[in-house]
Length: 260
Length: 260
DNA sequence: GAACCGCGTTCGTATTCGTGAACTGAGTTC
DNA sequence: GAACTCAGTTCACGAATACGAACGCGGTTC
Image (cartoon, rainbow over all chains, first blue to last red):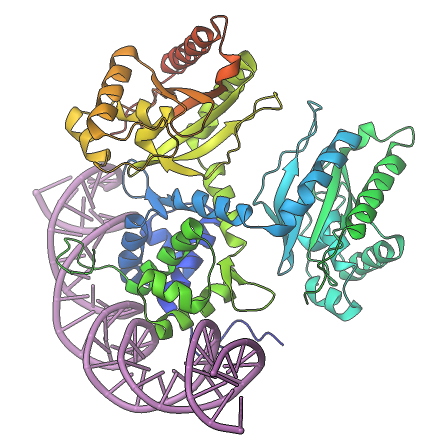
């Protein structure tokens, strides 16, 4: 299913796809000159020329003061804001996010599956000075984050396997890098009802995640990120229980789980 | 308009422009079916068909559970996050935003000019329960906001006039709707060194704005939004002085005002 | 049940775009 | 100051798109 990439999709618009790819490319690997972008994306520079001009005119790209380096434009912000405004899940989950943040006093994230990554759609920041740096819109591998693992844990086993690559690059010395081990961890998460990750994406930070029970196959999840130094005295259990309670509360009001 | 091809921009890519226009259209006026979007944008539906499919595949559009209504996709979030991450002005201004927020205890916005609108690029929320609802990425008319007026006030007079429309639609009963009056207000702001707006975009709220002195012709500004009920006891003067002090502090460290 | 929406989809052709190669022009090197 | 590099720009032609019209399809209305 979903024979996405190559030529199985009969009619797609090449230049539109390129415009979007260009935005993704700059978002992922940073700004560049026409020539650099051309080589990074494998597009002839003469083709890029008209494209970047169009995108600058429309406000989706901007240039340096020098006029040679192209970066993202402000319209990205407008689109993002509109996306968040129109998101029903976000609206429903916001009060619960507040509750969890208040109960744990730690950084809370809301995220959604996008391919084999998760993208943060909301957050509440810890009040402590020592806290994780993050932002709405950040894109992280699903298999290495508690938030993503919670979502994967609700999938059929074969689907999980498809979303965990065999070649995992370590983000920290603690990152689990073998596919089988990750799948085992996800399996444990499926049994427990919550997912965990300890210093695998950020040194010194442990995360706990649960899905939002809005749809049959969850695409959204929330997580709490805590510096390990603050995890003594049964605080870990408190956080996990807070998450599970939040999940239960959402499930009780889930009246529209009709989709998918 | 813009249907006649007598433009001075000879080579722009039509389908790329349409893809971006589609994102803007949905961001501005909300989701819709192919047919609705087709009529809203004046594009043949058969042309839109391949376009929306491309954009859905790329993750920049999504459909309803029903599959008929098209809305923005998650990649908008990723782009927005990358835009903010790479913004030098934002990075420089962030600590000052914090300071102003701490000193005033009110909602503070950072914004940037985009045509005749301003787009919020940052904010700090008031701690008070009564506070303005806003979000990074929101787009508002420059001429009716304190933030935008501050920017306009640093422009040559003829340029100001070009960015204030003759036909202003009132957002509240207090909105200044005649162009001349708005220009006068901006003129006052230019003399004072800060801009003001009282209940013109949000009933019960007064805003004060100053530009960020990073470039010769400012494109960025910050503003404080206060419920009028909290403006007694010389608090208005305190807020204005806080803003002017913040501006002065930034100006003192502005070593890179070489551009434009 | 036939006509009628509103929805998305397909098709063939005229139109437009994408592309390699050639060109300008500013900085740098030798 | 000639040669070199890196940046953007232009052009003509083959390749891909855009579009009007027709089709399929599930509802709703008469």
